[in-house]
Length: 328
Image (cartoon, rainbow, N blue to C red):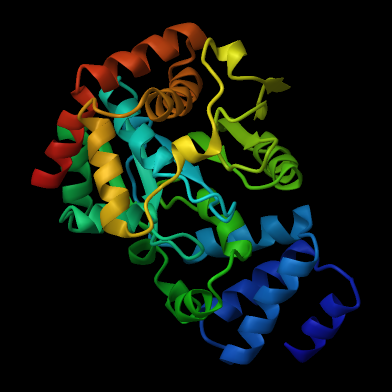
């Protein structure tokens, strides 16, 4: 590891096979905590390359516990996090809307590292019991069209890294990897990223696969459609800059989509929106993100996708989906 660290400190990069080998070794506890912390920190101060990101991703997927559910043709909605914006749980809410609107969802989630409340923190707060039992996962898909895949259960090799990430308390390249390593290997993906540079890296890697994908980055830094301004959308078809007005929606202020300071506060916002009691800004943001996932997953026009998302939320079908998964 000493040689690798020196190489990176000198602004040299890793080839794909070296990156894959290092992450495999790291996950298997072959480096000490100080070396791991140094390795993670370097990538906060220099850009990651396509080869490095691809190598890290391959190592994670090779080490994961796979979830075999291809027959559901599910989509994952996941953000990298790490944008420092402290929004409410937009992608998690959107997942329930998308499932309620008829597109199955395999939601990959984890506890927050650089934020107060990640999707797993939220689900645990409501009493959801994480599982890797394939029969329960299939039952969840059959019953409500959504399963929740708590990352640590499917990436057990990462247990060596989790305490170090938690102690650092800042985004690392594992934030970049999270949406790429869903253990169910979905063929459809909506992913939000915290930088335009990472959006382009994701786009390059996903173009090499058979995925249907949409990558989102708000130009003012959010890892999702925030409606606070224009955002970049990259898909297998094209790249475009879109605006709230272009989606038929109003721009919102940053404070209108802030999350809570605690998991409990975040959960209250989450529940209020699902019950149809959210503010116009909150509703618009989750509908916008859910609609983009529905457009990707169902291959329908955006206007129709917005209509389906709005109906799923305001009719409380999304709330019903959420209540159902808690009862399984």
